[in-house]
Image 1 (cartoon, one colour):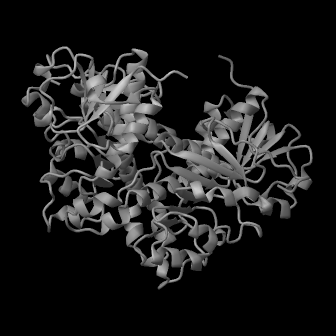
Image 2: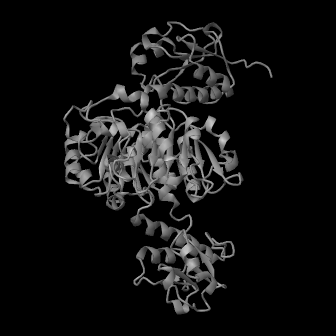
Length: 316
Length: 316
């Protein structure tokens, strides 16, 4: 077999992480020096990015999903003829899995069961629920929301995906019968929602997206999961609903304020699960990034459209 | 549209549960009196089963998955010309969902996180794992194991299914690349197993299937889940492994002894999750049974092979 003609440089970390080298080779390219490379996988900071690149380099893969700092550093402006891709979507899987964990733990009454030190089968029976036949509304159909849908659907849940456009959410593993609702019609989903997962970006429009009114329209068995940003939920209204028991509970990987201060009522409410924004821990990131790189190298070798292309003129 | 000719009686509960009536009608039949029925959905005890049935009744759906008591009561012998179906498989979904919940809660370090009353992101980061890219060995590929596979596979886990025959496990939602291993070769799976779910029946052969030797071959990050019967795991060996930290943890809906007595070390080990055999709580059973009935009525109306047919000559 002839050696692949496509050469990918990995910089500045030397030696390059083995998982990344494996991903490149597994995708049909070879790892080589930047001077002879067709593409660059950049693992460093924006300020350290090379001022000039060899003219052979046509593509640069960046290590982060949010690339504001590369804009600020002028990286895109300095290399107008190079295609840049971010890591957008690469880290969605772990966060979506965390959301599913929080939702299942809540629905199946795990917090109370974990506190028990005696066999309370009859006491717990009425509180153990299931996602089967329930409607899970996922607010935000970006990378995390889209990763979560194929995890929730096999549990027999009906999914309502809420996105800005209301354009039908589709993609690998997403069942055709997923209902999509535009964000400006969010109000009409509550009456047939059992559980909510908040997965939308934090913007002026999404601040307190879940407030007292929305919580009041949920059910005493409803769980509210937030793996996005704390500001999307009105914390005081949530604490009131949890205290009154008008909803089933809340599973929060993000809080407002964050970090959640010692002594905050959310720490001790029996129907609140708090994880300290650890749904995408560092040790899982390299493997997820390597998967993303492997997929993009395969596409690059095949001359296909790359994933997570940066569009500098649009600002992301 | 002409009224369906197929009539199903529901007895002895009067009025019949609405969910069941809906399932029958939704499947294209009508609910009627036993005297004019083509089939009977029996909700009562074995001892109360009618001594004789109208000759029009060709099929009887029983309400339980385990039907030993109907054998003892002579129900099958008294009606040799009637086809009986049990509820085998109907209740697998809830138990499989519970297994997934226990596994995810363990892998993502929920027990320690739930105990926290302060923000410990850096402390928890290294302990939050993911099922992505991990190998989950499911011992027992009956109804529960087969229901669990399509729940675990979308999380990016590789599944090894262990069954008696080693015949390839296939079915709705089960990915084609699921590896099947016969039970007599169970020993060779441990070296590439990350997590184990015990879902096999309790027999003389499966007693202490997971003992000190098997636990010793797992990893410090491995979780052991049991939603089958307590006797399949050697409890003392498990407590030793949990105490020494040679495995990650155990999620147990069933224990040996059961109920787990007050003061047992499993109640307080930080890496053990105990739920008191509540993975299939009563209030979820009617809905699950109604789904099973609906599917079987559809088949009956269409003249197709029914699910969970009782084979009296085989004894189950």
